[in-house]
Length: 277
Image (tube, rainbow, N blue to C red; front, top):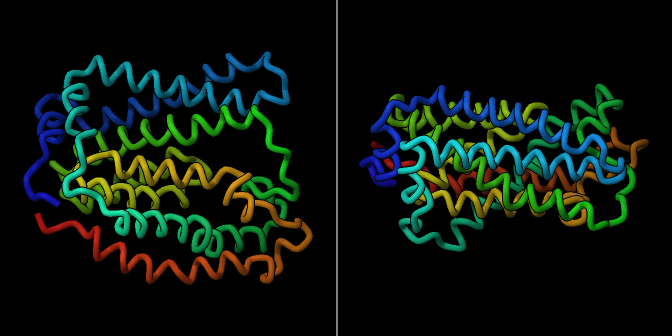
């Protein structure tokens, strides 16, 4: 990682924008999007309402972020640098290790350390943790939700949390404090999945710092969201018989993937460890 500030960071910190402005902006955009998407979809057929709500939520949120990006000079000046060509050029192996680490966390260690203990103590949390016994037939309505999850969300979230918030905090508090803080806020805004999202934010932050571009992190973020689609990899882990959810034999794939987390983390760290400032 280059020790000197990037052009994007210099443009962002040259004005009056502060980290709390970004947090407040995200809070306002998310709150307005929640209310607006509810209002916009309350009369839609119930069979399609959830997917339409999610798409409206992502669309309204992204529109607000885009509006502020255009209006605020500091945000506008950073775009060229944040979406610049990655330097150095990303290798498929490096990005593969980063992506594999997110899978080892999301489908392995997180489920073994967080989801399994919760279900053992509170089996009624089955649906709250997004598990299901039956996978609904694939319908066109789900593709709308997939569009927001794979395209809209990764771009908007990487721009706000890694592009704006991380860079603003680095100037004031240094690299590691900023990586942890921006990832914690990233987790908080994912509400009930905060424990899952915060470590993912750390991976995305280190990928951004390695390449000084949002594109590699957006790619990994989008790929993870795509595979989480229930009719792809996600279905192999979200679909479980409810009556055997507390049996360890039902969690063998998660234990196997969790065992890969440490070696993958070591390989990832060797490639993405930030250089001393």
